[in-house]
Amino acid sequence: MTDTATPDAALGVSLLELIRSTSCVLPADVVTTVAAGRAAETAGSNAAYALGVVCDNITMAKAKSQPLCQDTGSILVYTNLPRGYDVHAFETAFIAAVKQATKIGYLRQNSVDAVTGKNSGDNVGPGTPNFHHHQWDGDHVEIRLMLKGGGCENVGAQYSLPHPDLGGRDLKGVENAILDAVLKAQGQGCGPGILGVCIGGDRATGYGNSKEQLLRLIDDANSDPVLGDLEKRVVDKANRSGIGPMGFGGATTLLGCKIGKLNRVPASFFVSISYMCWAFRRQGVALDAAGGISRWLY
Image: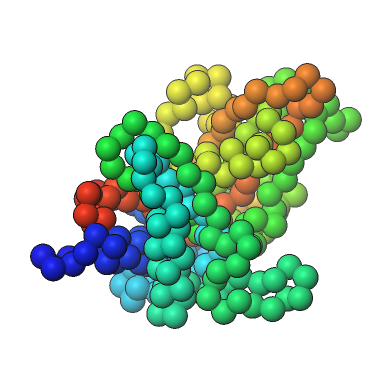
C-alpha cells in the first residue's frame, strides 16, 4: 500500500489478496498433514500415487497463483468486527473483491440461480458470498474465508438420534453416526477429508456450527477433553477402515475431525457433519486501522 492509498482502497487490496491466497495456497497445517498422510502410505500403492498428485497440485497452484481446484466452491466469510464498524461498507468492499477475483481467475464463475440455472458470471447472488458477522471487544477486524467445494458438500450428512442402526442419544450413537457418514462417502468428496461436526442444535444451527469447526487448526486440541477424545477416535477408526485417499484404499481416509456442540431442545438430537476435501481452503487475516493486512491467521 502506498502512502496515498485511501482506507477503502487498502481494504479492497487486502480482500483481493485474501481471496487469492485462500483459493491458491493451502494453509501450512493442511500441507503438513497431507504430507504426513503421503508418508504413511505404502510406496507404489494407489494411495501413495493419489497423495503424490495432490502434493504436486498444491505446489503448482501456489507457484502459479492458480486455484487449487477448478471448483472454487461456496464463499463463506466469517468476521470479528469491533463495535461501530460499518458492516454494509465491508460487505460492499468484499463483493467488489469477489467480482474482481472472478474476473482475474482466482475464482471460477460459480454462482448459479437455483431455479433457472443461469450463472451470474461474477460469483454474486442471493446467499453468495455468505457472511457470518460477529461483534467483539477487539479493536481490529479479523476475517476468515472458507471456499467449500460442491463435491465435499454433497457428502455432508445430518443424523437424528436415536437411530435404529446407529444407536441412542449418547456419544456412542454420535460416533457411529460420524463413521457412517465417512463410510457412505467412500472416498467421494475428494478424500482424504476433514470433518466438521456439531452435536445438538437444530437442523440449521447444527450445520452452521459444523462448518465453523472447520475454521480450527487441524492439530489443535479441543478445549473439551471428552470431545477431544472423540475426535481422535473418529480419525483413528476411519483411517483403519481401508477406504483411503479418493477411495483407492490405504491408511489416510481422514486428515482430521473437529467436533463442537450446541444446546438442543429435549425432543431433538441432531448430529450434523460437514465434510471438507483435501483442498481445505480456509485462510484468515487481521486488518490494521487503514485496512491493510497486519497478520495472517493460518
